[in-house]
Length: 111
Length: 111
DNA sequence: GGTGATGAGTTTCCATTGGGTACTGTTGGC
DNA sequence: GCCAACAGTACCCAATGGAAACTCATCACC
Image (cartoon, rainbow over all chains, first blue to last red; front, side, top):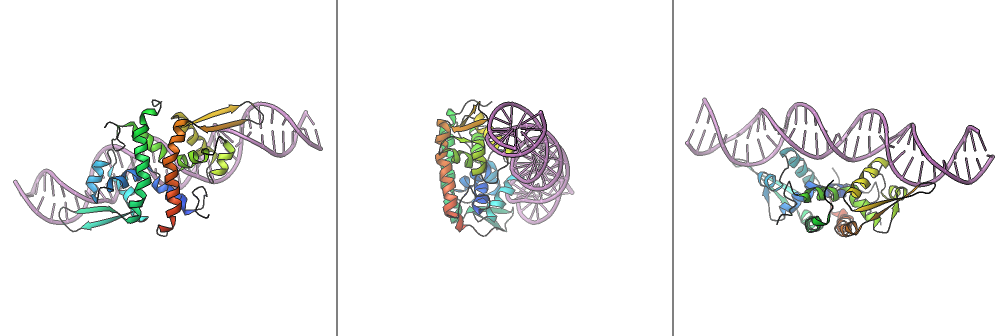
């Protein structure tokens, strides 16, 4: 079994690092509803700064999870959408998000 | 629905940030097999430095996902174990890890 | 009684991220 | 000419991430 996230040199490690990330998990989840524009994502991912959103989206695009499509309109429109791979990745991330939401009350009050 | 990971101020956000993290996901998964010692975790989480492992474990402990038990032996023995909450958190993280492992071949070659 | 091993970390340092705020560029409407 | 909308950049500082070396306690060995 060459594909092991516990192996330091396995590319799995990089993928896990990409997906196991607050903003990636939220961004992919936001795109589950369909393509979204930069501004819309920025609104949905409350608290994200434009810079961090850009970096997050670029990384996801680079790894084939989302696509970035520019429309030559005015004002400029850019749409981000899930690739089939990205769509599949949403399932485990959705589990994680919903688990957190439904178990948040079990966590000790923050220190 | 007050518990929303997309809300910046919701404590869910902090929990997602804690769990959606490469080392947390791997550490919790390693503890699924039963209590582990520091050295054992260090070996299993290939490539982690002792400092980062310490920080990771302390954060998980602080948030009630694992326990840290010191045995007054020589040489010193310290065991980390999942709490019930931690055990429950393993399920979505395991999904994520196995999804990555079984879909890694679909990712484009790293840039 | 000094030497080394064991286990579980610290300490120090540097490079890489994360993140906030302000700014840019393009075009259209007022 | 001036402002607004959209999609980002640029610049800066603070917080992590991570490697390598060091610490501390105790025991076993020579």
